[in-house]
Image 1 (cartoon, rainbow, N blue to C red):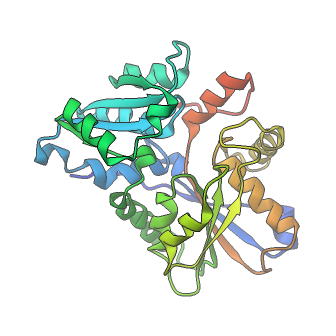
Image 2 (cartoon, rainbow, N blue to C red):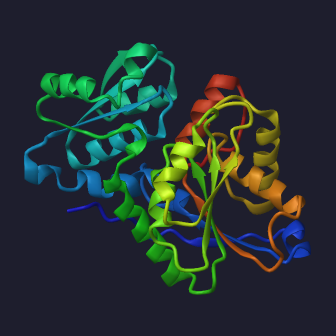
Length: 304
């Protein structure tokens, strides 16, 4: 059976700039889902892994970088339910890396590959070789980016509608591999718009837009120099946001998304009277990795 997820609350942001523009921002706090596997990652995994015991697939194999939220979530799930996990990881092993230390503790088998080999992760021939090497493994794409991720995200949309029955004009989420946005788009009602804030530099938006031919979505750049690159502007914004709202944002996804959203508000690009539903996708463990990489001191949730 798919794993049950605890109900995450919705926060209403109180901020002078929002009052001045008569804009309401509500935030679905998936960062507060109970357990190590909070955020959108478990929602995306829910229907990709729940059936594995029935099809005799006692292993999960997936892909990610050395600080991957996705690898962290898969390793946590595997440890929880007793399924062996395998991570194909881009780059070299670092004993002190907090993400790698944790997923090893959870029993994930780590296989480090070159960047050139990692670039083949979506190619059928490469996947066939991996399947031959790990015949009992169920292979999940990087970031959980698969149509089977959508039902878990649509469940979140329906959950929000029960918690917040008022009109929503804009749904907002960060955009990496795109499966969270694709799931939200499939749950939209007439008159609602999805704004996706793209954190990957160089993403081919024309190809991404083709995934949403029948859904109203707009893309906005929010990479601030490159995916997971250090950005002092984002760091300062995260600290200020935490002081004002007591909400932790991560510097890879939600921090960049919220800064870009606030920039749009400052530039009067959002219609007064709008109700915005923002999805907090978690990523707390990524903050620890960011602090480790750059020697920063961004706020971290106590549980992590």
